[in-house]
Image 1 (cartoon, rainbow, N blue to C red):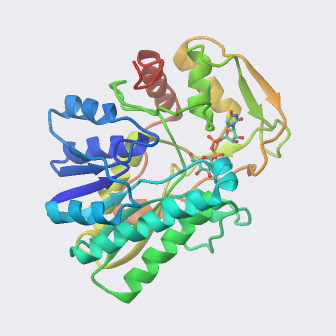
Image 2 (image 1 turned 180 degrees about the horizontal axis):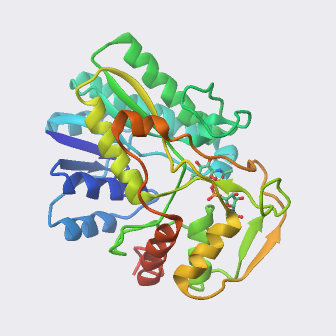
Length: 337
Ligand code: UD1
């Protein structure tokens, strides 16, 4: 009983591979390494003392996928692989639809052909779009507002249609809120290429001297301190959520949707203060104009995952920042030595 993890060398993927190995599962990783490094898996092997088979297969390579499924006896798939930058998705939408949506269709065809019909999909809170009230609840009508988010939404639709067409499928749609932090060992973590788009990786690079100061996007929102609120979740809690979801769906048919978040919002300045506590000194920042497309505040209603899976977050914002900082400090240039 082997689990295929697509995108398993990436940030959330590598932490999930580690959690799977620690739970005694066998894991095979597929990744095209377009935005990640195989070094993450080497470190997962070092941390767990276990081996992970790695295949550099691209999801657009249907024949390569078929050969991979023929070579292994997979029981299920955890599907992370995909492009994930919101801004870039508006500049090159075709690439996003091709790699994320068409790539997933190839994966699902290979799964179906080889009788593997259990999948946990890496979706995003971004599918809730701009018009839902907070906190977000799984039963809300979804409607993403950018091409990246629409690829997540379309894949959710495809998986739902598939499960409706054939009751042998089990599908978990996991809507992540804002994953941050790193494994407490400081050996694996997030390694963004170029200038980080996301808040915590950017702060971490300011702390390590790779960026001059944090630009806080907007200080005039209708929130307690004027900066946006988000639901930050420790990547180790998130990884555990995948395991819980997989265990739940494997013996059951149908589609299940779960928010993976903490259920509370933290502001940009609260995150900065928490990171400063981890580093031990203040960090330079400036409040600048709002970033286009940002919502003032959103967080999860995390009660379904608790009720169905017995899963909830365990780690505080301070632990997220401490662990993120340990990773960044020990690996100032990420996996590139
Ligand atoms: C972003 C994406 C979201 C995606 C998620 C994946 C956008 C608009 N949304 O979420 O679709 O699923 O990443 O991780 O890109 N901030 C700053 N300065 C910075 C960076 C961020 O002030 O340099 C602020 C943002 O305005 C926001 C908060 O920090 O209020 C979090 O930003 P970010 O980490 O980019 O996450 P989201 O925007 O929530």
